[in-house]
Length: 218
Image (cartoon, rainbow, N blue to C red; front, top):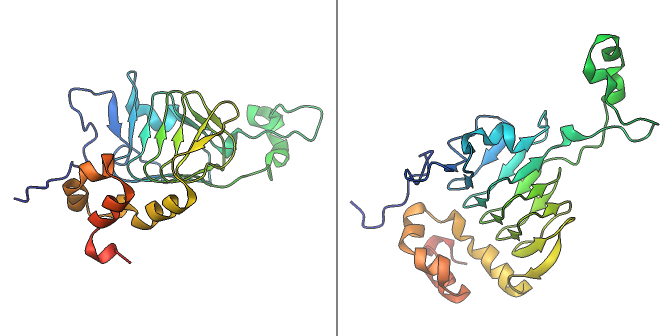
């Protein structure tokens, strides 16, 4: 057996002693949600209800796409486009959804603004109680502070916080961000990642580049 054995990405509870933590890829069933390996959600209540409690108003066709190695704190919620209401008339109330003869007017709910897919990159950390609005794109390596309401795109390796979320600072300069995106450690084979965990977590960029698999180096 190889000395570098990766964690199993297919196990629902990667930490059996902490059932509040679930890997999302083996959990989600909706064809409208895509999650990469090892991304997890932590909730002391019921993390297995992620699809219904944390992805809201998801009637399609837009998708929620979450990359690999993302950490989602308790209460992270994704608001999808189905939450939209008309705002061009006197009332925003969605009368046709209530049934009866009101449903004859369902055409009034068609053609509402749709910002498209919500996309989260790889290695993104979400703090407690983050809310992500429809159609937002959050870059690789980003950090979203607790309680943030993300209404606009977040750059790669950016840190944002607040309501609405604003840039706090960049984790790296533009040149270093480009180097990190080029090395894309999250796409390395799992065994190679396992061999270089310490470099990925605490090394510098040059050491990370040197650790990349031979076939991934420019």
